[in-house]
Length: 279
Length: 353
Image (tube, rainbow over the protein chains, first blue to last red):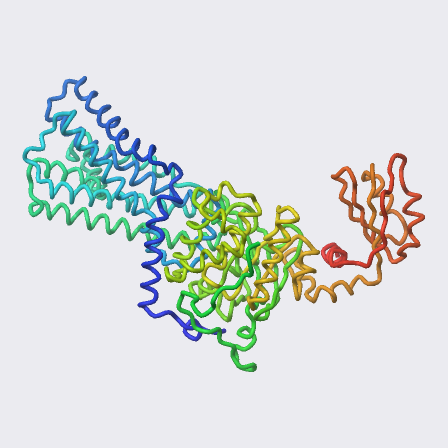
């Protein structure tokens, strides 16, 4: 049997070039080919309606319950950021399922495409969309719900929102990997969305959770994100947020590596069990 | 159709080393001289119960052996569930075998996944497997990226491919608006976007109208003329007979015969075929024909207004009076022909034995 070396292995540079092409192709194709609701009306609705509905629900609930203004504003900021989860987690988690439903998963998996580039490239558009949704949420916080941005460090705010969008997308990728093996990942994504509402300091501080649950909360990047966004609005500079940003980045990296490990693991398992075409 | 399936081979776009043919007699020679070499290939599907134990086990392949030479157009035929698609899935790295060995262009299907994937193309039959909400161009551009084809090369090659598969004038339309035949032609273009050496065609004409199927067969011929190695699976015997240099007949997970179409037909040269077109025929008439002495086999398609019945017999035309005498009331023979046996007759004998 001829070894791979005899057949001619590509140089590291060639492989890197190919990986770049895969990333680029997946990045541009991710929105067009894999998002079922791809139309400008839908995008605008997602960016502008989702956050106002979510923020409004919790803000009016807190007003009805006669919470102090500071508590309402705490809730408004938390939900402005959490609103991105639908796009960052749900839509990204759906990518592999979409491939299964369209019957394109076998065609994709028989390509030599670098799996890291493919895995990340297809989700990248959702990072931008998620950041826009959080941006719209914060805009509503300022213009409708009276959150003051007078002290805010806008550079820190932009960095934190972008980082949180990336971090949450990595969670979407992690769940998307499950869809490679299971018939759908949407149930897992749904559960995860509600878990973030509970654990990530959206409507109340993480310190209010039972002690044993708090480490779980800090394993989710969104928890760092909500904390950091509130700090940036309160006037903390990017420099003073480096610690929390570092933890969020590390967390996101670990989630992404776990997601990729899961993706390759499930790819191998699907090859053994023949589940690529089950949907 | 727009043209021939050719494009400059000097700018294939992805880095490639030539396929290496080792000298006969070396330890690797047996597998390396073939584009595809399959030995004792097995595949078991198991369903596990709640506790992880095996609830059910099915052997889809139980020892498949065959080889395909470089540049050959090889056919794999067999009934539904015989193991054709499982074989293709293993050879294209979508499924791992349970046992046995398989090499593609000298590379091991278990270990050399990356190299194999760079050098093969796959055409899946049916409408699925394309991104329907985007255009043909977008589909091809995406897959050329996944195969790492240089963007300059892809820019030239994609319009050429669309031209030869006859989709150039509708290249910017969403694939969801395409007919089944158009989708199948796009499948072929997709499989060629990285200029593979070996192409797997898994029932490429299934469900197509006669004109669409003829277009696909012409493309397969063109690919063969280009020197591509092709492994084709099909349900249609005339297609295998028309296209393939050699044919492997697979039944119940094993290759039961492997030869040229003409040599396979020789297996049934002791019989003739009475081809009947009838009106009003039912299973009752088919059973009556089967009961006639010296009738080897009767194959009938009774679904249409005009039925088609094929009677295999060593008696040839001498059986006709009995065939006519067996007609029930209300059944008429519209046309009858005595024919030489075809590959289908050989196939039926092989898969029923």
